[in-house]
Length: 351
Image (cartoon, rainbow, N blue to C red; front, side):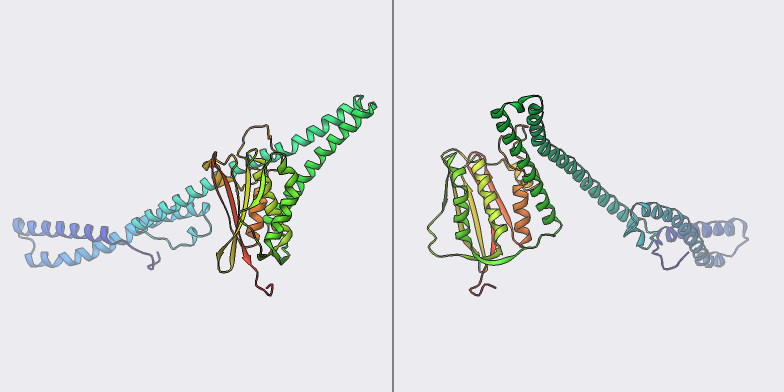
């Protein structure tokens, strides 16, 4: 057995002391009653017996423990081949207990993480299935109706083909978003960073969504007059998608006759923060941690009264993080929500 292993001598020391003490007492008693031993020899035998007992006990006990501890290490190493199996084997029971407890705790955390991931995977697959089958079944229904004879009616044929086309467009929209978010997650999306005016970009998005907002009489506005441009660095097209998605959400879940307000504020020396605030229905606190997950919806009903792929906020988060920036959300039910994200300021030279 290797001598470099950590050892616990307490057991051997105590046991050797007791053995030596008992032996000396026995010798002294024999000398007293039978006068066969010298008292001095009996006392001198104490250290000799102690040393011999200690060596025998230490070697035997250590070998005994080592074999069993080694088996524990081997068994555990089958489960954890990376770090635990590379540690030196110790026969110190306190240290061994601490290592086993830490190993068990790490495994518990790992199992809990795997369980959460498995639940997320099942939920994600269920959401993907739901999002894809709804337009698929819609398109199939219109086509089957046409095949059953409705194709002979010119008006019905035209109306059903238009509806089927909308279903196909929704499928394409979902697939494009899935493709985009996959590229974002694997870091395969190249950002074309440039210097641009974030205020002008927001105004352009206001113009694009004006008709949609007017259907619910929602006002899209700035918090103040921005007379001067505010230049930032980023992928202009992707940042426009971020602003569009956030404003679209505020319109979808906003109150009729409501307001969505956008502000651009200085955060620190080289950062600005863009805030999108609405007075809509708000979001319950328990939903906020998962709000940016793919296909996660606050409304768990099957109606899906609001359109969209269910990927908008997830795409927003990945685009902002791809820029090395942060996105935040604050919300209160019945009051409204505020989404905000940071961007890097552009220098006058545009670098």
